[in-house]
Amino acid sequence: MRRIKSFLKKPNIIWNNKGLTLVEILVAMGLIVIVISLGFTLLFFGMRSFDTGTAQAHTQQNVRLVGDYMRSELRNAVEITASGSGTPFFEIDGDVFKHNGNAVTNDVKINEVTIYIDNSNGTAILKFEIDAQFEEESDKGSFTYEDQVLLNNLPYSSELETELDGHELSGGLYYNKPD
Image 1: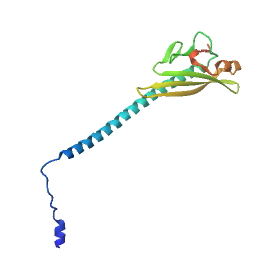
Image 2 (image 1 turned 180 degrees about the vertical axis):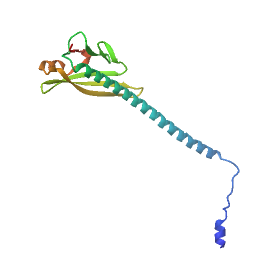
Image 3 (image 1 turned 120 degrees about the vertical axis):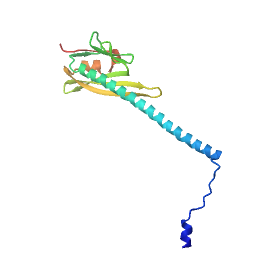
Image 4 (image 1 turned 90 degrees about the vertical axis):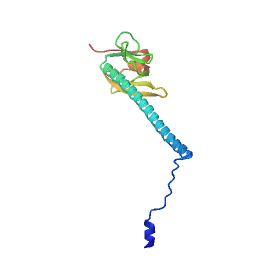
């Protein structure tokens, strides 16, 4: 019984009323600084990743806008030439995609648009590839968009393929739509 009583007694705790030592304060401060610096590192990394992702999404959205615009304009064209004059036409001026001299989107850098002609059952399919670039303060990247459009009013011809296959839009692309 005596054993049980001694086991249930409160242990003798010696209380130190002096406070914290300088070493304990320095260790605690060091741990706090490490935890806070790790937190800020993760925060800034997350913010930079978010900004890069936003820039990529913005570029992709604008490149798809350019692709949709080209597809809708060229689908029913009755004539497409790489050398010509007049309107309507597409071109890349510097790094801005323009239609009839007006910027379709001017906040994305389009490096090049390349045109290819494919023969599918006697019909002409115009394939195009848009290469654009997004740029942040420290991150650079590019986005390539490929699309194709069936030319409803143009049959496939070797002349059309010779003139347009591998053509880059920096020289302009002229077309006529039906009246």
